[in-house]
Image (tube, rainbow, N blue to C red; front, top):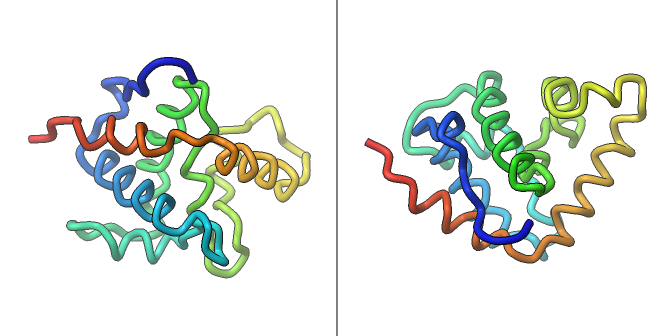
Length: 135
């Protein structure tokens, strides 16, 4: 990414913005911990100021993924995982990587995970989300 992170208007739903802020805060606080910044769907939902079912959060995570994609960044939402599998849900792969059908999901996810950790300016992305005026 060059320049500033810009959240496109269509991805600025209030819920998506708060989820992005909580996810980015979690990652920045935990990226060097044993779990390397991973968080389960359920634990992310518990951090929110509103009630969100872990089974329905993926639409909002999709907004975050596509905002990252439009800024040429790996999707930070890949850090949100199913508590049983330790991987993002099938919807993540279907929506964000439809061309990877039939490819090993773990390989795809590990590649994204490495790119997330290689990117050093997630704090600027967090700052961009915090600046969004949600009414």
